[in-house]
Image (cartoon, rainbow, N blue to C red; front, side, top):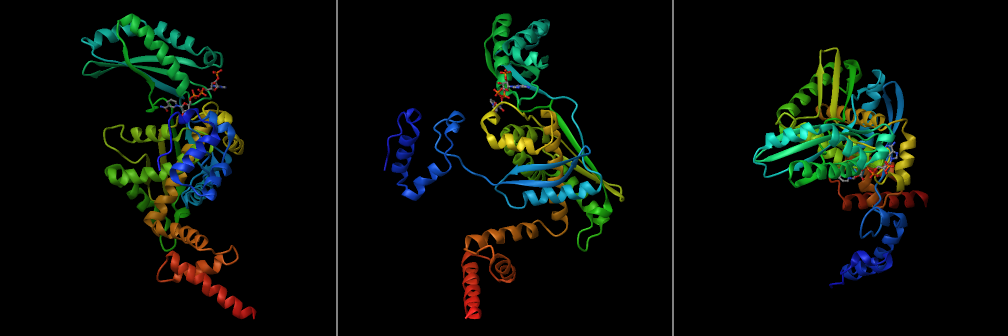
Length: 424
Ligand code: NDP
């Protein structure tokens, strides 16, 4: 079957979904899904819009960040993430909470010139006109300056091979700032073209947002870390070792950081932020010294465990899709913050809580124990267990030699059979 996808973007929604249904030979029930999750306003967000794709949204609790209690909305499809965040936050709350530091919040973008025979001479011309170029940048988005933001500085970097990067730093106020910065960069690139008689290869924001770094820290008495048969001091020592391994070994570092990003992405999505921008910045920062490392570090002196997480956090509380995403706005209301910088602080603390819970589980009971319970729950529900049957099904499933769909369905059938016999 080959439906006609020519001019697909020009079709209205009904035509578009009909074409897709024809191509994939969808049943009426499948076609009804397009309607079920359809939000007309979302035609304005992406191209060739069909429908929305729902993801579960939940709430992490127990957070105390810079002395303030926070509840944190998270959007994720992964079981255990919210439970782990709340668990990590609970331990840190007992220790007095997280402390965060955010020194500046500027976005950086670059204009790249190519084929330069004398890179340093071109750089010198640009440096001479720095003040004018900053003015050009501000004129390209004047409302930003009126809000107290605007172009802050400009630097040149010789990239080698005849390439020169001109980096523009901008205070983007409450926005993430990618679009704003891109407009400013294109205006500055034109002026640079006139000054240096070159054509820029490209003008674009850099997601390596090194001028938007945020740091979250916590200090936990080891007594709060005791887990089952493991003493708090032993757990602290093992967490510190796990942290060291993530500094040494990229195989471990990637997973260490994935665990941190489990939480960070979930809050970024819940607040309408561009999580790909945060992801790319985080991983670039993890390799800042040329070796990919864990983003967080944990150390212990035997009495306390100290954790810290530092990463770029280019988030906004206005702009992008936030203005048409009602749930992003609702989630921003659930969080207590005033500025985009405050949101960055909250997200960093969340990432550290996520990391603490993951490492504590990993070096003690293992990660599967917590995960398995939630996975068995999903399995039981998929096999048709009702909410009333669930506790008993889970209990039996945990002891079953095999934990698959067929076993679970048989368990449920046996349970119902026994109940019928008892009822009779
Ligand atoms: P917008 O283009 O939506 O710009 C921000 C908007 O917020 C402007 O319209 C601005 O109004 C308004 N605004 C209202 N109040 C404020 C305030 N206090 N401070 C700042 N702005 C305010 O979004 P961004 O420029 O933030 O760009 C983010 C989007 O760009 C995201 O959707 C992202 O996915 C996307 N993007 C990301 C890229 C990347 O990461 N590499 C590349 C390209 C796009 P006014 O116009 O009056 O100033």
